[in-house]
Image 1: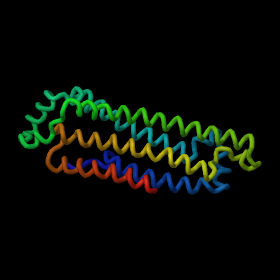
Image 2: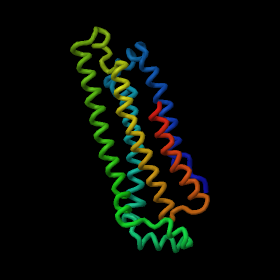
Image 3: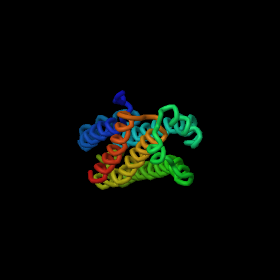
Image 4: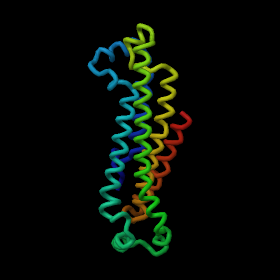
Length: 214
């Protein structure tokens, strides 16, 4: 069975990043910013706000699936429950040996999404502080146009926000890759579905690497 398009986070993320890049380029135009600043809360329409809101949604979707299907349904990848799934799916002994997760590695892996979520929150705080500081500085020390368009980022601030947001993509895609890996190792998907999971596992990390060079 093919994986539904909306479950392929790597493609959704790619489409969003393209949209975000186009919107960021348009946002450099003064006339576009003048229109945006006519709205009651113009900061909500800026590329950086839309970007981090979307990133937060993607991460929450990943974490929600992990909590429901990996933490709750398998009791944190409990070996006994995993064995039952393997029996149900007729997993061969060779694959069971490959899929076996040592106790220390199991808990390290299970904690990784939580660590990722904490790191994302730190990035979000940094980005928020940067945006607020830049807006306040333009209001107090900028030109007349900067005081009017105070939520428009300078070229330097835009680069800073891009550097801050890049790890966010890594966090989201690595959390998703962990989820794909667990799908295979606990026998949730087998055969062609498992091959698709492994392919998406690599594609997630490759997209994150592309964002690094971007």
